[in-house]
Image (tube, rainbow, N blue to C red; front, side, top):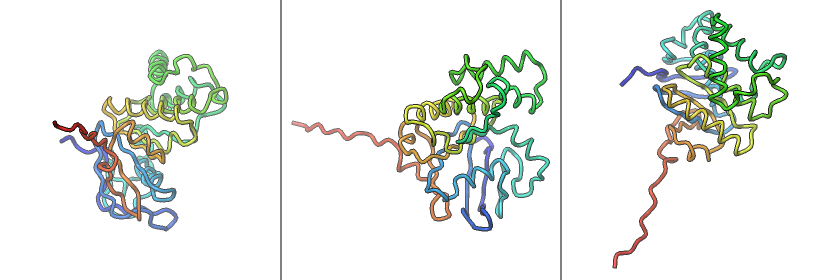
Amino acid sequence: MEEALIKYKDVEIHQQELCVLSEVNLELHKGEFIYLIGKVGSGKTSLLKTIYGELDIESGEAEVLGYDMHTIKRKYIPRLRRKLGIVFQDFQLLIDRDVFSNLEFVLKATGWKNKPEIKERINEVLGKVGMEHKGYKMPNELSGGEQQRIVIARAMLNSPAIVLADEPTGNLDVETGELIVKLLHDFCKTGSCVVMSTHNLQMLRLFPGRVLQCENHRLIDVTSEYEQKPKEDKRVDI
């Protein structure tokens, strides 16, 4: 089996000195689609924050894309984040520039310099999320669903090994939410690992994946509870 992208062993995570998760054991690989479920405050967002270095690991062994997250120096965190795609519920688009410029800003910040290549890559990711004709729009001219599609395009720019999505459908209607999860699910098929926190359990049945639940300070694999069960054959032999 290929080397795990994320490896956690007996990890403990604190939020403001309170333990939110302990004894976290986790291995995630290329092409996996992971759901994080659990009540508000159960540790879903805290776990995601440890993966991109926003929250320190309290104890245990934690490795993300070869970086030791227990001992990583702050100066190396931007390097790690360049290999990640992060999708926030509140979009976090730059409101003073259009869609194209939002994406261009990310590429330039991560070392892209060739203008034709930048333009080609932006057009490519906008096409993948069905927003190829919206590059000139300002964020406030887009619906919530359109903004979230732009955020997913932004996350795809550097073909990240891991995409982290924190409640990406939380502020969207059902139909738009399904579209967003489908985009993430399809992106997973390119080889990236996608980790998505959600309260919408219907998505787990529409777009199957591995399901991890944060409950009572533990991370539990509950995938089997959400797997599609074969329908019973109710025919009666005569």
